[in-house]
Structures are given as structure tokens and as C-alpha cells.
Image 1 (cartoon, rainbow, N blue to C red):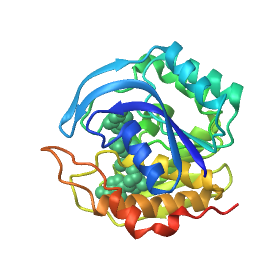
Image 2 (tube, rainbow, N blue to C red):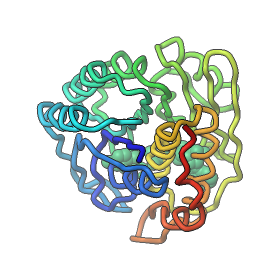
Image 3 (tube, protein in one colour):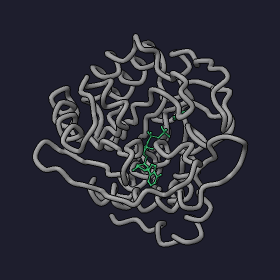
Length: 270
Ligand SMILES: Nc1ncnc2c1ncn2[C@@H]1O[C@H](COP(=O)(O)OP(=O)(O)OP(=O)(O)O)[C@@H](O)[C@H]1O
Ligand SMILES: Cc1ncc(CO)c(N)n1
């Protein structure tokens, strides 16, 4: 069985973070593992508190997995402090897994800062160059590159700037556009566009986590990057179409539907 590891924060209401990642891995027929970097007290209405895990325990969790189990793919989510980012990057350099998907989580949908602003430059310097693909949303791309994004052309400029800053491949997600969402992939040569119809729902808690862990799942199975993103987009679409009105705020994506409707997702290709 193929495996994937998420290095991310815990979301107590399980719509985003570690919990969303593990559900996504499971729905893809991938054995999921986790390194917890922070515990958030969070529900569909917002984040109430965050406690970071010490960088020492983050390192030990990574060691525990890599010294025992073959990891086909790594997804990185919330890393809020400089020490934790440094611990993760140095361990990933040591173990050099084949596939790393970096979701540079900064602010929750409810507006809470999940990355200490002081740590942004370290995240860029240490993790951008290590990652197979980086998946910022529009706001994150703006913070990383300093380019204000108002149009598709601005997204493309921002993609180019991300590569100049050390990314190998970038996918800028358009979920926060006011139009139909369009995600743009850039590998330094060609732009690829992943267009979709906007699904009108308030329940989009965890869309970014779900997409990045679906990409990591597809890479773990052996799909190339473009096909992995195409498959992941299909997965997130179904998960948003069937998203759940759980709680009073922004409800979570739905992974159950995909498990039953997409049994063929369990195939491996190499
Ligand atoms: N309402 C929607 N309808 C269709 N697709 C959407 C919608 N919202 C987001 N998406 C898609 O979901 C994926 C995640 O994008 P988004 O921009 O929401 O990520 P994010 O802001 O990082 O998420 P999060 O807030 O969970 O961190 C993208 O592929 C985006 O196009
Ligand atoms: C723990 C965690 N990671 C990521 C997100 C995405 O915004 C969130 N809300 N919570």
C-alpha cells in the first residue's frame, strides 16, 4: 500500500488540518500518517486558541516515521514558528522524500493568523526550494511575492515571481477570486489552467488542505504532477459539492461521497 505523511496542525473540528489530510488520504486508498506541529482549538466559526508543539517533538515525530516506514509523499500544512519550519526543513533534507506538496498556510478562512508573520521569510527560504509543488491561495501568493493579485495576468506574474524565489512548480489557487475559480500551474515553462465552476456554498472549511493532500495522494500513487492536480481538482469539486452544513459557521468538505463514488481512486499506476 502507498503511504503519505502530513506535517500540519490539528483542527479540533476536523474540517481542515491534519484531520482533513488523513480523511483525504484514506479516501484515496493511501495509508496516511501525521506529524502534528500545532494544536488549534477551532470550529466552523473560527480559531479560539493555538498551541505550538515544540520543534524537538516535531523532529522526533519525523524521525519515528522515516526510520521505520517508506513515505511515498509528504504534504506540509500549518507551520507557525521559525523553529518548527527549520526543524521540518532540516529533517526533510535529511530524508529527502520523493514528493513534497507545500501548502503555505497563513490565515484561516475565519481570519486567524496561523503563521507568525516573522516566520514568513524562513518559510520561503527553507521550504520553497525543497518542495515538488507549492500551492498558495491568492492571499498567500500576494504575501510571498508582494504582487497584488486582481486578475489572471497578476496570478501569472505571481507564478513567475514564485519560481524566481526558488519554487520548482507552483499552483496558485483561485478559490478566493470573485469569478469562477481558476487555478494556475507554472513549472517555469508553461502555464496550465484548471478551470471550474464556482460552487455556491458557504461550506468551504478545509478546501486548501483537502486539495493539497489530494495532490500528495496522487503523487504517492505515481501520477505525474499535472495529472495529480487534475485528479485532485475532481476530488475537491465533489468534496465541495457535497460539503456539510455542520456547525453554525463555515462547514467542512465532504470526503464520504468520494469514497463511495470514486472506488477506482484506489488504483496505483506504477
Ligand atoms: N466555491 C468554490 N467552488 C469551486 N471550487 C472552489 C471553491 N472554493 C475553492 N475552490 C477550489 O478549492 C481549491 C482550494 O482553493 P482555496 O483558494 O479555497 O484554498 P485555500 O484558501 O488555501 O483554502 P483554506 O482556506 O482551506 O486554506 C482550489 O482548487 C479552488 O479552485
Ligand atoms: C490547523 C489548520 N490548518 C490549516 C487551516 C487552513 O486554513 C486551518 N484552518 N487549520
